[in-house]
Length: 264
Image (cartoon, rainbow, N blue to C red):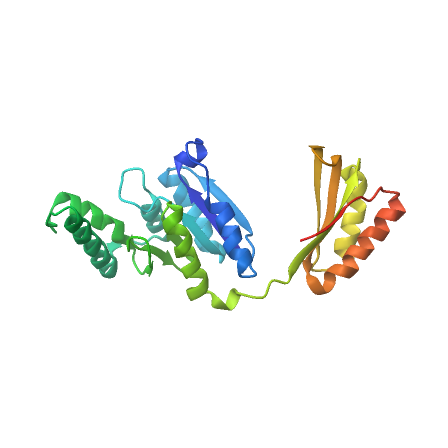
């Protein structure tokens, strides 16, 4: 099952805030023997979000969408999800109860009494309006839940909330995807190499070793190795040694200068 990430927010695209979701998602997936297949960034545009979410719902992928689920005018994820699914937004009764509980706690902290009928309370209840049929994702930080429909999951943009909620999704809804980490990498540094001369070898290795991916990472100004290409193979540990040996043999045939070897 492929896993994808959508990060929502004009503040990310404008550079006002740095995205913390991509690295955190990769870290959490790696710890569970999983990997991220794709990621997309999108601004606070309801039509654009609707189009992206329509693709996500149709993909069959496990998808996380971070941000835009609040109740301010620039939050569109809940409405975009409903539009993408062709479903109405409805106030989830359990979400309403959790939001009301949080409102009462906040009022008590300020020495006030919460008013269930006040315009401010009614606006906050909108955070519990999800596409019909949605399930809840618990929020351990302040109890204001996220939601999911099928395999697409919506969490807040705040990392302190989003990342524990993503962990709950992985461990509670998809424990069957967790596996021992068997994907590894082995690579070599090739000083002065050019990617074009390595391409035939890369194609041959992937043909000879199904399930192994070959990668090349060129650099022109590395502080230690200068101009070089890092060429490597990654995949199941049981296949890696043979693929790596074949790669090195192919490099010798090409007359390449082989530098540092690395294992990840």
